[in-house]
Each structure stands twice: as structure tokens, then as C-alpha cells.
Amino acid sequence: MPDPWDHQSPTIDLSKPGVTTSEQRDPVATVETPSTELVPVPPAPGPDDAELRQGDVDAWGRSERARELARTIYDPLYRYWFRAEWEGLEHVPTTGGALIVANHAAAIPSDAPVIMHGIETELRRPVYGLAENLLRALPVVGTLWARAGGVAAHPENAYRLLHDDRQLVLVFPEGTKGTGKLYRDRYNLHRFGRGGFVEIAMRSGVPVVPIAVVGAEESMPIVWKSPRLAKLLNIPYFPVTANMLAFGPLGLIAYFPSKFKLRVLPPVHFDVEPDQERYSRSRVMDESDRIRERIQDAVFDMLRTRKSVWFG
Image (cartoon, rainbow, N blue to C red; front, top):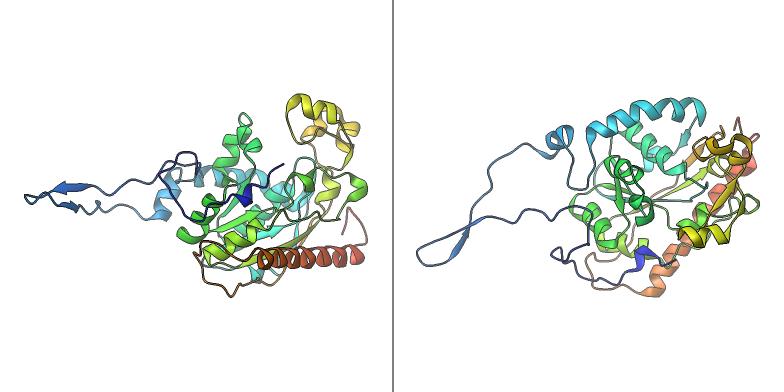
């Protein structure tokens, strides 16, 4: 499956259709003077971004009201089912943009909502999650994901969120290779694509914040995959999970109560100039491999000290 991070687009052209999931930003109005010179008309003063988000959907499709409702509904699952426990939250910047990178797992990923909910609850900062178009194309699910802060995984979307809007952005470089691995391969991280996430962070001038996650693998483990059904449905994989064997159709939405532990590692800063047309491919790949190794080492360290899947 192609890596959505590795589009070759050194410049940003927001006039091209399909680049982002939102409408293009309003152009500046102009008036014609007697000399035929077009003079910009300053926009009328309006509410600030925080006020707009509180009352409506933002430019990315996120709704603060929907997020508040989701937080209320999801919080008991986060606190009493997964019992999420954080370490190193002080490494997440309280201001400015940052690209959050984590390992990925579970047939229907449970790690993304845990990370987004935890940071938003503990730090009071919104988190925008980048996802494949497959998720956004699903009826109802796609709309709910957008309202909760989900954005199509495209480099220009990431750049605008990080560089222009100075937001926290969450991405899983393993993609569907991470969520589609069998239980016997749990916690062995796949290659982080071709390092596209590193190049986006460099272009945007923001740090990468690695997070190691333990607990997601056991929440919905895959015991078998059907290539035939995956091809028929045109999806990356069709999983048969232990949850489906235990609960039948309910296993599609019912997670096992594995305890989540999350360790935020110190941010990775890049000593390069932002907004360059291109960056050294070898440097990008080296940084990507180094970040993957740091997360893998942290995951193994957390597993060594874990006494129980269910109690931590």
C-alpha cells in the first residue's frame, strides 16, 4: 500500500482540488480604485479561533461540541476499561506545533483514541489525527472521525496543521502494516514507511514527539486474516480477531480490557532549515530509523516490567 506521507510535493498549492479535506480558505476581498489598482479590503473583525471552535466546525471538520460529547462518552472506557497510565507527558509541548509519532496495533485501532483523549484531557490541547482515506470513506465512521479531529493523511494537510495552525498532529508511520499484524508478531514494529513523517516535520520546523504504547495489541488481537475477503472488499486486510471468536458480531466493537501504558519520549529536534524544497533522503531515513528504534526499545523495556496484560 502506498505511503501517504511520501507524496513528492515540495511546494504548497492550496488552489489544487483534493489537497485538503476542508474548503479552501476565503480569499482576501478587493476593491478597484480609479487607477484600476486592486486594493485589499481588510476583513471585518470576528471572533477568535477559540470562540469559533467552541460554536462550530473548524476548517478541518473538527467540532468542539462533538469532541466534548465524545470525551464524556469515552472517558469511562479510557479510565476504567483501558486504565490508561502515562509517563513523560511533560515532553508534549504546551504551545506550538509538534508531530506525535507512535507504534500502532489492534485490528480496529484502540491506540489513537487513547492517545488523543489522554493528551486533550491532561494537557487541554487539541490533537488532530491523520488517517488513511479508507477510514474517512466509511459511512458514519468517517464523519465521526472528522468531527473528533481526524484529517486525511496527506503531507500538505500535515504541513498546514503543523506550520500554519501550530497544532499537535498524531500519526502512525506503520500504517495498516501495524494494525494488520498477527498476535504472534505483537510489539515488533514494522518499518516506518520511507520516512515521510520526518520530512514533514523538517519542512514544518517542528519536533517529533515519540510515544511508546503497550496494551493495544491485546485489546483486539488478530488470530487469522482472510486474503480472499480482503481482496473482495478491497481493503488492506480482513481480520479474524479473538474478540470475534469470543463475542461473535459484537467482537467488532468490543475490546478486551487490556491495561494501557504510554511512555512519551523526549522530543526529536532537527537542525535543518524549514520550508526547503527537498531534504537529504539518507538523513530522512536515518532519522526515521532512529525514532523507530527509540520507540521499539521503550516498548521492550515496558514489556519487561509488565507483570500482567490486564493489570499492568
